[in-house]
Length: 294
Ligand code: NAD
Image (cartoon, rainbow, N blue to C red):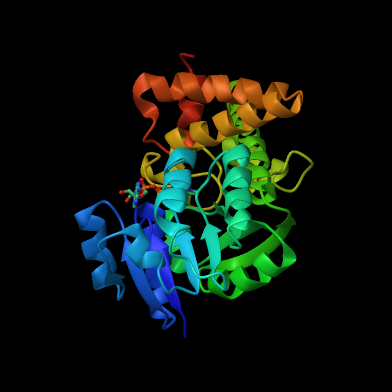
C-alpha cells in the first residue's frame, strides 16, 4: 500500500480521503480546518501540520480545494518544493482550464507529473466511493493516477492532455444546467396544459426528451425515483456549485470564442436564483421560479 498526501478535506475530500484510508493506504491529510482534520483522523487518516508535510515522501498527492487560486497556491508554495519526481500530483477540484494547464506546466518544468481529475457525483458519491473521474494529463500521468482514483470512484476516464479533465467537467455541467432548466420548463408547461406530471414523466423518460435531469433526477416531488425534490430540495448538488461551474464554462467559452447561448442563459438564470437566497438548495429547485405565480 502507498503513502498518499491528501490536501483539502471538506465535503468531498473528507469522504475521498476516508476511502483511500479504508483501502489500506497511509493517508497523510491536511486542511486549514481543525474540524476537517479531526474527522479525517476518525476516518483512519494521519493528520499533519502543513500541505508540504502531506506531500513529502508521498507516491500520490491529491488536492480537493475550492477554486483555482487555492490549487495554484498549494502546489507552487507547498507541494512542488518537496514532491518526489516519481509521485503523481492529482488535482480533483473543479477549477478553470487555464489554471489547470498552468499548474501542470509548472509541475512539468520541475520534472513532476501532474494531472487534473475533476469529479462527477456529489458528497454521497464521494463517501460511497462511486465518483466518476475525468482525467487530463499524459498517458503516463493517467496510469500513475488510475489505481488511486479507482479506490474512490466507479469510473476513471482519460480525457486527453492536461486541462481536458476540467474541459469535460465544465462542458458536462453546462449541459446539465441547461437540461435541468429545460426539464423544469417542460414539467410546468405540461402541468399548466392539464397533463399529469407523473404521466408526462412516464412518457418523456422513454421518449426523445429523455435526459438524466428527467429520468434520474426529476425536479418535482413524487415524480420519478427519489430525488432532492422529495426532500424539499435539501442535499443533492447545490445551486451555488452549479453556478460556479456555469461561470467557469462561460469564462472558458469566451476564451475559446465558442458560442454558447443556452449555457449563457442557464448561467443568468442560476445567478438570479442563487442571488435570491437559494444558493444552498439543490439546483433542481429552480423549478420553483416557474411555478403558478412565476
Ligand atoms: P469544501 O468547501 O467543503 O472543501 C474545501 C476544503 O478545502 C475546506 O475544508 C477548506 O478548509 C480546504 N482548504 C481551502 N484552502 C486550503 C488550503 N490552502 N490548504 C488546505 N486546505 C484548504 O468544498 P467541497 O464541496 O469539498 O468541494 C471541493 C471541490 O470539489 C470544489 O472545487 C468543488 O467545485 C468540487 N465539487 C464539489 C461537489 C459537491 O457536491 N460538493 C461535486 C463535484 C465537485
